[in-house]
Image (cartoon, rainbow, N blue to C red; front, side, top):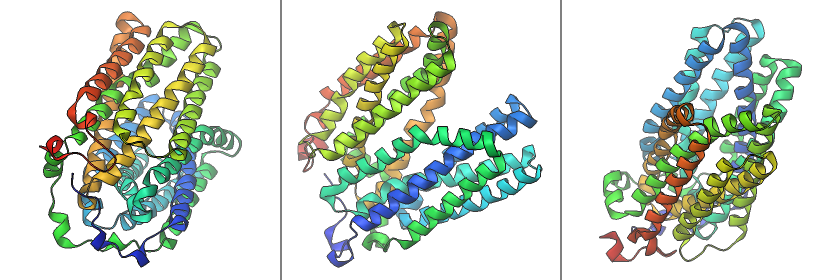
Length: 415
């Protein structure tokens, strides 16, 4: 296996420790909370003035721009210091959301202005993501990457759990303009925390190191193909369940539907928070990849059971478990990629993983909608469970997963 960032590129005296990690997590948590204000405020503006068709148009523009940003963000994160990319993206988002705030406050937020703003935001968000995954190995020692990834992921889940509630109350009470102001300020805070971080030693990456290609790393590390397959197939199933299957099933079986849907999603978020924290508190297993892939099997069983049950209580408990196993597997796999992939291609690898995840999400929602219309929402759960189970079993039987170890793969596996 190619070694992680060469030690010759990292001078011990310049190695970052806990304070930069704390700054990173704090800034990203606050900007993530601000994003929840944007997510609630944008539909409030569009639905009140223009209707659902315009909302769908604006969200489509955002999604397409974010996908384009991912294709740019991977090479950028390998060619330029990730911290500088994150700073630039957050400055752009703070400015654009500040302009949106003024337009919303004055009542001048037109459709084309909103489309242009969300296109810039999507592009900045897509460019930002690969750099945000690539920066952790630069600010903590290799032995602490799993714990750092766990803390970062857990913070994201905590914000996702409580942020929408806070944002919803704020938008209902004060309106969309003030909510967007909160989002803009949160990005300014993120800019400050990134600026205060000391400069990582690999900020000055040697030009020769940038020459390594993504295809070469994929050939050298077949494990990446397994992880990308898991991400793509898993997100097809998860998108169908979360976006279509779950709300449709609860609408048929539980009243009041909206309250039950919110509770189940909250249980999923709570499970994800607990799963990520537990992984961070435990030592790295000898074969973290095998454990992560194995966790998908109970996840598949719980998805199938959720599709067959009719009670809100049992569904809530099952999604608590689904969130737990999903987050634990994600943290383990992200930590493996951060330690196993050379720094000079890490951004492109994470961009490819994100494209596999985000790019297949709409596909899963579309397939689930067609399946639910033809046979009912329960079939969506069963299909998702089958996809996850088959992918997990295939992964467990693959040589890259079976022979991976924390110190690296044997040479035979790479061949």
